[in-house]
Structure formats: structure tokens, C-alpha cells
Image (cartoon, rainbow, N blue to C red):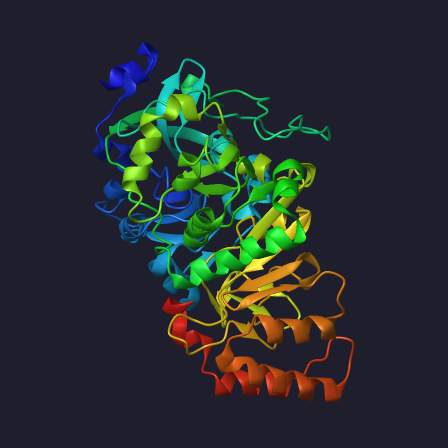
Length: 490
């Protein structure tokens, strides 16, 4: 009964999915809402995979997608991708030079879409948006808001996919976009200051497609393993020691990281009434509202493999859950002003970190692995930043704590604590040499601790406030294998 989700004035533009081809230009810019593999258009990519002809497209997404989305999109030539290289296929093309990828901090990305600030994507031809219903004056988003309002504003045409596998989520969202120089009047997690829909003139909606395809889960993440559980345990110890449980609940909001680490942390935490302000949240955290969690503000709700039942439970209880849950554009959730105002404890993850605390979020060797997302926005503006990662790749061949990062996305100045499965280090107030000693001692893998200590000793003989020996750093990499050989083992 999709008619109940679409106003009478738009029912005449409901089309079969295959008819969407007429809205796709041979050369132009397509925007797809959705992030963390969630709330992507389900029918349109399948249609694109069947298209014949010479296409040359630029694609904007809200964030990472799914393997199926990438495989279907691969049938046409995509020249540029923003803001992330998502999945194996797009990474291979980006690293071979056949696909140009430029990543952005996400709050900046939305602003640039709205303002035409990306010269190669200044004109958005069509935005494809998943929705759970359309009203007379706008679109009710799905489980992700991400950059959807910016895409709708910038696009010449909007194609809406109504997804019947989800309940109507009207009232879950708070859509407000920054304007001018004034403050955003959000002072608590659940403050609602915008509209429940993404405003869109009806004449801009070119077509409506109906689907009942469910979410397939965030393909970029695996399931919870022993490493994540160990790291989560150390984070809990850190929080109790540094902050204290009562203080954490009273004085701070919490950003719990991403993927299986976030789920492991929920399992390990023995606190109640946590207040969460984040970019994206796993569905098990949403289910914990009323138990460990009292309030969540996010831009996206996503599920990991095996969490389908939990997602259905959230759907079934959405009427009561949305009293303590709000979804916003990441132009708001990732805004420096609000991250600072929420007095946030942020947990961020990385591919590698060097002995001084600089973090590489995006690259393995010279190859792009993903995009920066909102990591810098949270690390820079949170009250306390915890950087968490395994000390070694899953095949135990490569140290993820290195003498010098091959690429730096987050500088040492923004990292307060480092946590691995081996322990945690408080880096606040330490000089670079002190940081190196404590990181090697408490966080490095037993397999590589001596090699790192030897490197640091040789670097110190060269001297400097932050001692570096390029020759010995390269020797460390050579002796411990090349990062390019373990793309799938990070």
C-alpha cells in the first residue's frame, strides 16, 4: 500500500524502476544519499548495471556504500567519486589512476555540495534519495540523513525511492542547515530545532520508485572479534580511571566509534544513561535506549552482519524509540560548534599510528583504502579523544604502530589517548619522546615492540624534539613486510 506514503499530487509520477534511465545523463553528476551501507537507493543501481552506451559520470554519495552498489555501478564509466573510495572495486580503480577520488571532512562536504564548491560537481543533475514517505512539502528520510538535504538542494531533479521494508519514520529526523554566522540552537542531545522532513518543492521531484528491498548491512565492517573485545575492555578501564562512571554520565556525551568496536564497547560498558552524540551509530546501540543509553543524536543508523533481527526489533519499537533518538544531517552532527558544546568523549579508529600519535585513517602505503569521513572533526573538537586500533594486522605480519605514518590525517596534537588490545596510554601533556616511550611500552605488539624500541633509540641518536630517522624507518618497514601486501588484513 505505497499510496499511503505518497501524496495524491505525486502518485502520477510513480514509475517502474527501469524507466529511471531517462533521467540519467550520458555525462553528468549523480548524487546518492546513504552512508555506512545504509539507506542507499536499492533499485536505481540495478537499473544502471543494465544500461548500454557510453556514459561518463561523476558520483557523489553520502559515505561508504555496499559491495552490490559498487558492482552495479561498475558497469558504467565513473570518472570521479566523492567523498570516499568505497569497496574493493572503487579502491582498485582509484589506485590504478582510472578513477579520481577526493575525500572531504563531512561537514565541509555538505557545505560544498550546497554552495557549488566542488568545481567538478558544481551542477548535480539527479539526486537519488531513499525515503519512507513523502509529504506535501518534503521528503521523510530513511535511516540515514548524511548529506541528503544538501543533495536535494543542489540537484536539478530528485528521484525518490520509497522503501516499504521500513516503517514510516516521520518524526525521527531534525533537519536544519546552517545559515549565516549565527549559532545552531542545539544545546542538548535531543533538542529539535528544525523540520521533520527534507524540504523539497514538488516540481523538483521527477519520479518516485517503490521498493521493498531491505538493508543488507554495512559491508565495510566485519563481526566482533577478540581484538575488538580486548580494545573495548581497555577503553572501559580508561574511562573509569580518567573520568569515572558517574562523571561520564553527568558531564559528558559519548561518541562510541564505528563498526564492531562500537558493538564490543556496548557489550563491555557497565554504565547506564549514556548520552550519545555521533555521526553514525550501530543498531544495537539504538536498541539499548532505555537501558544503557538514554539519548542518541546521530546522522545514520546502520547494522552489521548478523544484526538483522535487532534492526527489525528497532522497526517494531520505533514509535517509542524516537522519543529518545534523533537523526540529523552530518552538517550538524559533525559541526565543530556542537561537538565542543556537547563536551564529547570521542573514540576514533585508524589504519596505523606512529610512535608520536599521528594517525593515518585513509591509506595503506600509497593506496587509498577509504576516506577521512568525520574523524578530524571529532578528534579536533572533542573534549577527550581516544584513538583505538589493533596493534597488528589480523594475519600478525605487520605492525600498525609504526615509526612514521605513511600518510597523516589526524595529527598527534588531537589525540589524548591511544588504545590497542595490549593496553592504553595517556598522552596528554607528554613531549614527543615521552609519547614514543609510553606508546611502545604499553600499546605495541610483543612481536614488534623491540624493533620499535630499537628504531626509536637510533632516531634519538640523530636528535631532535621529535626524533626521526628516515633510513631506519624505511628499514623497519622493509623488515616487517610491506603494507601493500595486507590490504585485507588491516
